[in-house]
Image 1 (cartoon, rainbow, N blue to C red):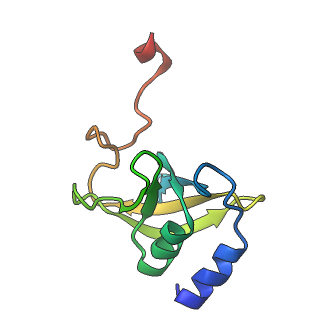
Image 2 (tube, helix red, strand yellow):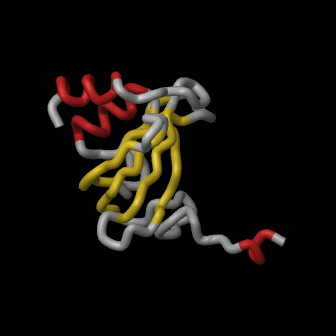
Length: 116
């Protein structure tokens, strides 16, 4: 996506969550499996849309990060959707390696019984 198109789209979003972010859901573009959820500020959305690589805003470190910058497990954007309120996006991605920092394919690998 061009920088101009990305800027116009960003103006339509509602950055209402912590640190002026939107919720970002990563979903496998083929299987539709939910892989992870994170936060994106304006810069993270802009970089994601213009580079095709998923970027997030780290709420704990208070900084922008490219998903896969240390692990090499990048997330390549194939498509995206915006929710009705404009405060969340779903990114359909092609994963280069596991998404979760634990080494699991998805961050959603635990069941209720695992937690009790």
